[in-house]
Length: 284
Image 1 (cartoon, rainbow, N blue to C red):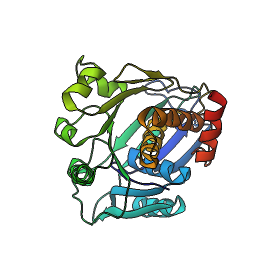
Image 2 (image 1 turned 30 degrees about the vertical axis):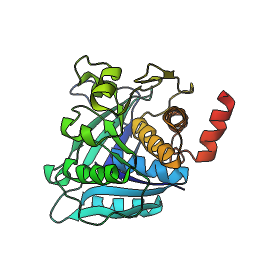
Image 3 (image 1 turned 60 degrees about the horizontal axis):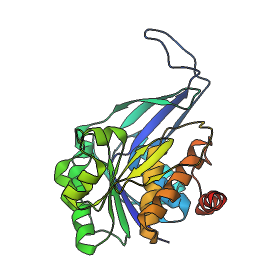
Image 4 (image 1 turned 180 degrees about the horizontal axis):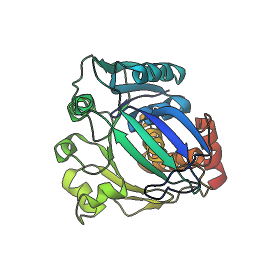
């Protein structure tokens, strides 16, 4: 199965399930609460692993209890953490996440700039694709440069602000709505033509639009928790490209994976490839 390097933010999330978002100055009681791994890179790597691929995570954590917790979780999730650096005297990035009954989430994150300024400190193991977010730019630039030299997919999870200096190294740009807005009215087709790469925009439960104008509708599900859905989508997309699927096939695969993820709660949220294929079969 394919190997994907997922690079970027790694966090610990304290998640609180609420009936509704609290009013300012109020006190509310959560229905449930949990401490879990978070951050786009870690959730994408978990997705790759659960789909059956080899997940290689790159980023930084602190030498604290949160960092120890995350190392254990990476091992449990079958993630190769060789490229994860532990910074002495640093606090691991962490978030408070509020999830309301309609599945929406609000996130408050705390992280040190030092965690995001790391360089690549080791030779890369075997890989078939690279997926990065917009944060650890020194690290991801090196990863993208090597992927470009080797002709392997380099996927940028395009949250705003989208770093323009990375775009010459990108093969696939998957924008959020906010990421697209960062291009100030430039269409997907224009972004693709100007940069000579493949582009799409994801809009949650709405259609994924490609730069050629085609659209792909995600499976309709009742969302129970949308936290991490975009990260799962990107992890599944990079996995599918690494596996050899073309871009439209990879988008359909990712839509199904994300739909399964948001329709479930608990430790079994991340789908397997078999589950994704079963959903795709029902749509054909």
